[in-house]
Length: 225
Ligand code: HEM
Picture 1 (cartoon, rainbow, N blue to C red):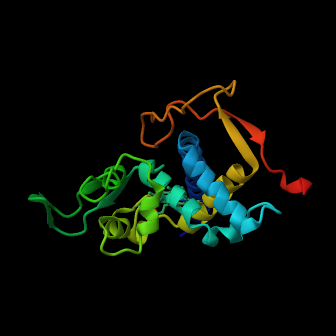
Picture 2 (cartoon, rainbow, N blue to C red):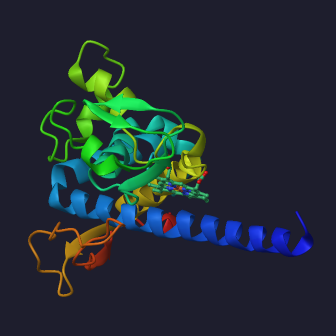
Picture 3 (cartoon, helix red, strand yellow):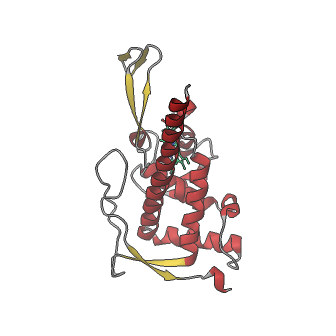
């Protein structure tokens, strides 16, 4: 590769990482907070878990995440319902037959990750926000157990799967945890809203049609303990 091409490669790579790594996580965190505001019992469950782990004497941090299974389940359930990259693409390397259709080599294929994660054949109540389903992950006998292994694909998969998966999980879990630990949230500009509007916008990325607007009210100040 000559130096010009190398420069272009790194410039595109940087942008890929920057755009792919910021917008996706920010969008998903917005959906996560919106679901938590619409499900106060789930919000309180996350807060209780955080208080148990931190003793509420300090700000929750990244190293606490492995000890907070319910928080992780909330983040996974959010990514299942609202994957920021709902469609990915591949090119077929060899002839194959899918559902009776012949797909020749070199065919461009779009893979609908959104549909896979809302497929009623593999997910119970696919359109509902039920973080608990991810707590049953280890239970091989449950339909949920089989499902989460093979049909949970917000980061795609295989060799071209998202290289930012671990970073995204860590960032999302830690940031959502801090927002839940430190603030109560009132819905709407005036704080008087009752429910967040969960409609999604159009386009290839799954953003909220009405961006989340809410008022934070301090619940716990970690710098004042
Ligand atoms: C919630 C956060 C994120 C989601 C949902 C997400 C989702 C995805 C998906 C679905 C793909 C396509 C995978 C495939 O085709 O199999 C992808 C690719 C990619 N992601 Fe992410 N991503 C996230 C965060 C990040 C972060 C934090 C970074 C880097 C710092 C990143 C960098 C990339 C890159 C470079 C690719 C292209 C990989 C390739 O083509 O080989 N992503 N991501």
